[in-house]
Image 1 (cartoon, rainbow, N blue to C red):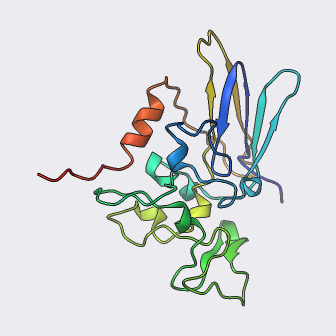
Image 2 (image 1 turned 180 degrees about the vertical axis):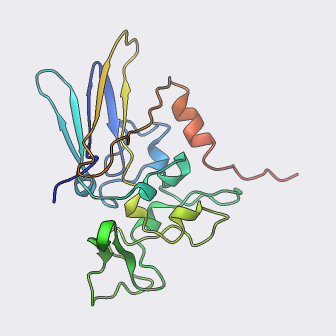
Length: 219
């Protein structure tokens, strides 16, 4: 078959930084650095093809992993992972260590998509991912609706977490261009698309501060 609803992005302008799971933000004090995992945790090449032009400085990003609609993140806390555990908050984020942690069942993932043709399962049968051990991308969202929305309960983090790519523009920036493409849905029905959010510099503050609540100070 051929890919449907394939996604790609081309961004141009005075791009200051690029980060995603597998590539940390520049600078040790960057506000997003504590919630992005490095390449020792997430192999981003399995999910994103990223190229930066030497002459024009434009960035091209292409999604290369198959998925289904239920995988798509809806909230910041669904894609961010902390580099160190945060305790005491009411909604602590999952950690980078969780991303590769073998589940209690010993199996991460399932056959899905039309006709269950997508068999993204770790480990490949008949292997076993023993609890307490690690396997690249084997970690799961908690099977607890109080901590995650229903469609992600018990699902692999790798289905959703790597669907995050961020670029920032240097100040002052008077203009920039972003082109986002979604491929056809042939031979299915037409009418599918994607939502967009364009925001200013306040976004990084909000996405971090609202993902978890800091511990309540003692009286």
